[in-house]
Image (tube, rainbow, N blue to C red; front, side, top):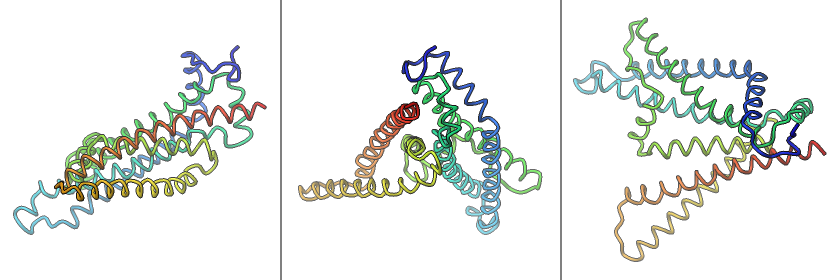
Length: 283
């Protein structure tokens, strides 16, 4: 039998067995998390819908009180609710990436698994990264259809159903952020918390949040310095550059490239951290 200590190759059958094992051990906990995620989303989409129709006057002026105008505001509010909780829940899910090494009993259980580090890494990636993202999308769809149904039952005005992928377009059109930037931002957040879980198996989310605050502050200052240098160079040469052109060409490029590089760095480092922990525990 190959063991993780003697084989670091990837075997599909062994990966499938590891994935089934991880899911069987954690499905009850993930079920509770799914219900909690659904409950939080239902609460906030209902509050958002009620608040918009409570605050915006419906019979003040022909245009501003129209149903189309109010529904548009409600869609924007729902889209930002979706993106805000997407960032939170996928980060919470990613912080459980290395949770199996939190206690001595869990570490012993992991050491008895014959899967290689790469297979364990892939299994955790499917559950904590891909699985949580898909689960959130499903929760959002169910929560927003619940909003439409509840508002209809209580005879309250409400915007039509806003799908999960539709929210990205709403956020992008109203803030200038392109969809790719939003996806890269969420992927970067997931990668950061996955790496944090391999460094701090206990209280991973809180510790990674504190570390990320420092990292993002430095990252923001670096981008600000790069932008100021770029502006000073072109202003000194007499070039005329519009603000939108600078925003799209320079800012987006730095953020997109930086997010991709950071995500790859986090996942690669997380893999070697998992491998290092396994070697140390076996010694």
